[in-house]
Image (tube, rainbow, N blue to C red; front, side):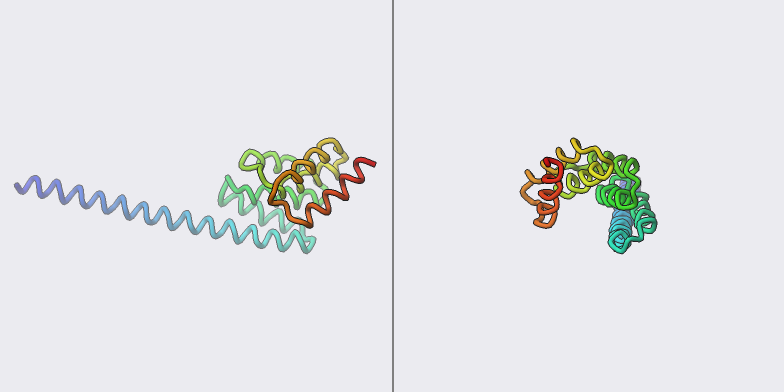
Length: 153
């Protein structure tokens, strides 16, 4: 009888340790997600303000926290585009596309990188894809239509 109580106590003890490890793992995961979002937020602010190197650094930190950071790759690519480093931008767009690509912002931003890199056929294709997505925002839609008019003329 004592042996079976001992075994039960060991099972309960191990089960509690596993639960504790899972709780700690989830808290660490939540912390990393929080940090990723903070780096992205500060990266966006710096990108808007024209501080592209700082923005790229912030997006890189987000990617370091989460290698599957779609927004990290997407927005770092945008910062590279704004900085004129189109090949680096297109490399990050490729990584973002592997993570998720049914996003008008993705096609709009990658289209801009193609456009500024004078790859007009790919730019036109991405702009047209962006326009087919229902969630496209009006500002992007207006900018795409202007760029498409330029490409067609």
